[in-house]
Amino acid sequence: MIKRIINKIYKLYYTSSSNRYIKYLKKNRVKIGKGCIVLDPKKIQIDISRPELLEIGDNVFLHRGTVILTHDWASWCFVNSHKDFIPSHGKIKIGNNVWLGENVTILKNVTIGNNVIIGIGSVVTKDIPDNCIAVGIPAKIIGTYDDYYKKRKLQYINECFEYANSILDTGRELQEDDFYDDYPIFVNGSNFRNYNYPYHNIFNDEQFEVWKKNHKSQFNGFEEFVNAVKERRHE
Image (tube, rainbow, N blue to C red; front, side, top):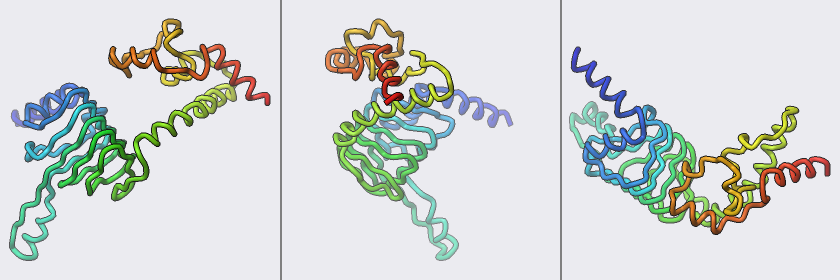
């Protein structure tokens, strides 16, 4: 009874934050790099029964519902049918700069390369090479990482206008705080001090310096963006 209570408290502790869960994985001999994020440790399943079979690189985003399995128990059926037990396990390696959408499952004997995005609900059963976007059950490559980057650069502008119009349709005026994630459309290196956004929730110091130098916002300031939204509404 006391042991069960201690185990429950321990589980609540290590699943209470991303950093604690990552420390827990490392303590259990899982190789995991720097800059990784576990969005919701309470709703994640990582197989550490054979920790040496799991390797996670730098800057990997493990979303809510992630399941990583280095072994399975399907051979239980053979125990019943053939009175035989055949273990099943294999290595999983996840590269650097990988984003796993919600409820992604990765099965044994899979390597995921660098700069890879895996879509929501996908089941990864085969290797995914570098610089790819993969989705589906089983996960299949649907495009390149760079093509998706260019596509998003174009799409986010229209999405910001759509969001702004949705707010205006309610009769409420646009506020800067409404766009806490969408600031790149009107914030750049010359005016970022005018807006108290959590830039460092996204960028480290080095990345932020590069962003300030290279990012060209569609509009020079929030007011210019608001005026453009209202002008487009009247076209």
